[in-house]
Image (cartoon, rainbow, N blue to C red):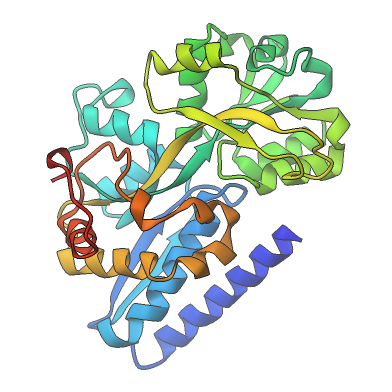
Length: 337
């Protein structure tokens, strides 16, 4: 049902975009903006489509601005696309955004100081899903039972891969002992269902379609999303303190009878510093004045609110976003200016 609803929304988006372009706004003065997301099986893409749709509906006629969301390999590729001018906006994991801004890991000596925050969006919930045969305890440490087995860690250039490697390294889980596969969310789920991998990493806002499809196809008794305990969380946050406990309530996935006690990090919408202030201001305004619409696109957006918009941002706000928040009475701390 979720996949059908999503397809309907995407079809609706295409019709809206087509009508906008072929109508009064198909002029040289029209400004077209691209939002880089991730693979279709996660949360980045449908939320990105929702943001692009509502922004185009609100801004195309009066402001001659249209927005479109595109798929990508995730956070890492989104940063690259922003730098190359192939995208104007991007959705990033909080961990990856922090690494990029600070110049750590793959950005060592190359801090991405051109990036600016627009808003914290929703929490990116860690979902390590494996076949029940390997889930001896149900805890994240069961990943060690996959040594020698095929495991999809997500796309090679994705933030999901980076977060998984960061988490496993902090817990002394040697992912190099697994037969690592670099698949997007939907291909990962298909491979899990077909027995071509024994586990997958799909951090996202639940319900995540890749996990939903695996539960529905394989059966809840034959697949398990692994739990994290307080000791696990402490070890992980000793490296990058961006995660907090998160409970995936029973019934979120087909046949899921018990809560899943995992962890989550924030996601954020970013832009380059040279993007016009007016554009970012109007996009931010469109998002927060139309949250009920985004809530119909994906349940993860129900966690979004104006009060949480600047919480935990790893880099300064774009002036356009800051102006909107200040108009709404939100005090911007010095580190975000």
